[in-house]
Amino acid sequence: MKKVDSLFIGLMLFSMFFGAGNLIFPPFLGAQSGTSFWMAMAGFIITGVGLPLAVLIAISLVKGGITEIGNRVHPVFSTVFMVIVYLSIGPFLAIPRNANVAFEMGVVPFIDASWDLTLVLFLFSVVFFLLVYVISLNPAKMEKYMGRWITPTLVLAMIVLCVAGFLKLDGNLTAPVGDYQAGAFFKGFLEGYNTMDALASLAFGIVILTAVKQKGVSDSKLLTKYTFKASLVAGVLLALVYISIGWMGGKMAASGTYESGTQILASAATMLFGNSGTALLGFIFTLACFTTVVGLTTACGQYFSNLLPKLSYRQVVLVVTLVGFTLSNLGLSQILKVSVPFLVTAYPLTIVLIMLTFFNHFFKNSRVVYGSAMLFTGVFAVLGGLAATGMELGAVQSLRNALPFSAVGLDWIIPAIVGTVIGLVINTLTKPALKTSETLTE
Image (cartoon, rainbow, N blue to C red):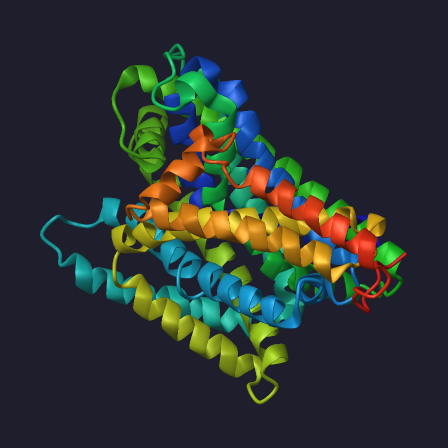
């Protein structure tokens, strides 16, 4: 495998990650964190960049990928967890969210106010998902389409916007507001959930490994090596983009009040380039969202066609695009209402599962360690998700509030540690009886 192949696969991975959430949330973080920008951005990058890359590395280390990692808890857990993740970051949440953001930013600013938005959204969705379907049908050529053509165009457009922002925006950073006042780092850490990239990594792992293998790499160590190189390319680009548009958001805060990152970027683009800026931003959003939807559709196609052999890859891709098309016509606000509770539940489980994978050699695939850690984490992750829906938890909420880090939304950390320690104690007392058959690839 050539060095340039790692670069192009990394660019493809960047384009798959870089979607709606990656554009919406950093500018808003910059505007709200103000003078605490760097602390907030550090937290954001940990969960928005570091965690997704850690997931990809963990998947490359284990023969059988994320399915086998989940099997260390229990095969039923592995299947249920991954099906929920794929459906959520696929047709039921992330795919329609990206399609809607592409419409809101790439089409709405250029149509007459008298037009029927419902009809325009329908027509846009037809074209958008038809193109997604056509490109997703041939995953072997994704590296060529996205890594060599689409992504460089997207990166160039982002460079134009960000460089202009650094040179021309001269507003001063304002005082932090809300949760950024007392805990900027932890608030940024939680905001990184909204990119959904750690969950997307669970799905993208199979796509990236397939792309590397198609270059003739079969040795497990080399597979991990090249996956790491490609991931590093994507990670560096993501971090640079987050810092750049986040800084733009910080500079824009002094010029007005904004309700979202899209408003900030739209105002900044217009301020920098006039009407051409609106077109540039619409192009960036549409291209970014499109590449992410293609990546998610491909990942879902590969996973579910392997899980359900009676369904072909082509059939799964068709179903995913049709469901994504249907739900995208519900509108962005309805889709976003569902995302926060789900992310609050799914991210702690993902973080703990991946952390256990990296320390797996200390307890040799012990199912009791994985199971205990995930049980304790899962209880509080689910409670956090329920609380995010607005549900009153009564005495249970008092228990959550009493835990360390609860004030910053990380009450699951101590239960995760307790569950892991209990699992380790039980494993020590009962080993080697409780072990799974999977071993970490040396």
